[in-house]
Every structure is written in structure tokens, then in C-alpha cells.
Image (spheres, one colour):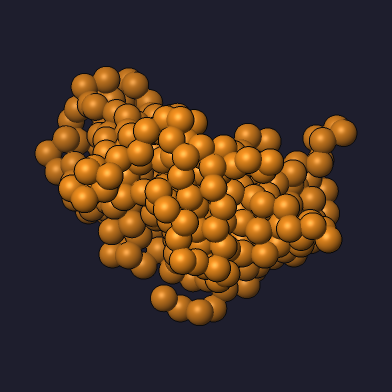
Length: 332
């Protein structure tokens, strides 16, 4: 992956009436990476993607793509293509015609269109499906047609707005790996917008967590999970126990960093509590432990033959223990 940025965003801002959708964002995205914009509804991630695509005009700041200022550049003239959440396929056209649509509008020669469409369909493993209509395809196949249509124009930057949202859980899991494989194979830059933290963490080489139009933190999935910069990020990424240390400081403690035992553990920190809930999740169980005079804490425990023989029950008194380096200290 080239370390040179292909996208540079400087002090970008966009308002819709009283709502500050994007609030002075600075961001660099490196050429050839799969970058995710992650956040809840209304955080500004989709607006930021639409600004990159040229579908919205910024109120302030600028966007550079491959060193070129995109101010005033129309969407169809940008080296960018976008795959929409709805896929936006034409129902009256077959698969090949849908994929070829953008090339035909650009008056690319017919033979080149045929070659590029065939290549794009092969990339997304839809060889032989060119004559079918969208209604004859599964949800996963329609998603791949939309992806082929976006790739066939050979953009420098591919924008994907919630690309897996319309798929069922099992299909989403398989498609994640397909997108990562395709991105690496083509060495393209992908920017994915998603509200699904599991999706972002499993796909992206780096991600930005957004909140109220601003970027709360940028980093690799490992960095954001292990070293959150704020209470918001610690709470948004994965599951965390947020403990008040006093003096305006907090401790973010992941459930899997806590041991659960019947007797007091020989660890730096140890407190007792009562099991109030147990959620069995197959390979692990999540316990809610009410600590006397303190918060309800979440503890994750891997399920093995040994742990199943030592299963805890609701109402049981247990001990929680963790080492001093298990958590991340956060300023208020």
C-alpha cells in the first residue's frame, strides 16, 4: 500500500439549516487502503461521503483527490464512483446493461464496453449472469452487480454507502471477506460508510469514528479497541465497562480483561458481586455482575468444557479481578 494520501480533507464543513452535519473535518486517506467512516445515525458520515462524491457542496474547507482540488468539480468529472445502499439498479435492463450504463454515457467504444463489462462481472464472480434481470437475482448477487457497475469505470476512489446493510447476517459475513479480497486484488482505495462496528472492525485497515459531525478518533481497529481516546469511543467500539476513578478520570475496561471466580483472585484489583444475568453466545457467555455499592459490570468468559463444568448461576456471589494494565485511563 502506497503511503501517499489520495484524499486530503481540510477544514470541511456542511450545514443543513441549524444542523452542523460536518464540522471542520480534517482527514487524510492513504492510497490503496480500505478506510471506514463509522458512527451512529446523524453523525455526519454519509454527508462526508456525499461531499467527497460531489453530491453536496461544502460551506467551508476543501477536498483534494490525488492532489487535485475538487472545489466546483461535478460528480461525473471526479475520479470517484459511488455504490449506493439501495444498489439503484435499473429493473428494465439486464445485468450487462446495468454494468455498462456509465460507460455508454461516456461514449466508450462498444467493443471496449463489452470487454470491460465481462472483466467486471468476472471480478465479482457473476460470469454468465449478464443476460439476467435484477429481479432474477438474489440480494447478494444484486449487490455484486452494483459493485461491478462501480468498478467498471476504474475509479481512483470507490465510495460505498452501507454496502452490506440490505443483506442478511450470514451473507454479510461472507461478503465482507469478498470486498476485502477484491480491494486488495485491485489495489483500489475504498471508503466505506457504516454504522456497524463489527463490519468496520473486520474490514478496514483504518477507520474514523464520527460523532456530531466531528471525528472522535482515527486509527487501526486494534488501536481504537485497545486505546480509545475518549469515553465516547470506548463505549461505541465493542463493549466496555466505564468506571469512575474520580478527579475527572475514567477507566475503560473490556469484559474479556476481567476474570470471574468463586474465590478472591490474586490480582491487583478484586471486587465481589452478584450474578444478575447471563447471556449464552455459543463460544462465550456474557455475565452482568452487580457490584455492591458500584455499577453493574459486564464480564465475558470463553465457553470450554472446563468452564461449562464451572458454570455460574444467577444470584451467585462471585469475584471479579483484573490487572492494573488491563484498562485504558481516560480523561473526562
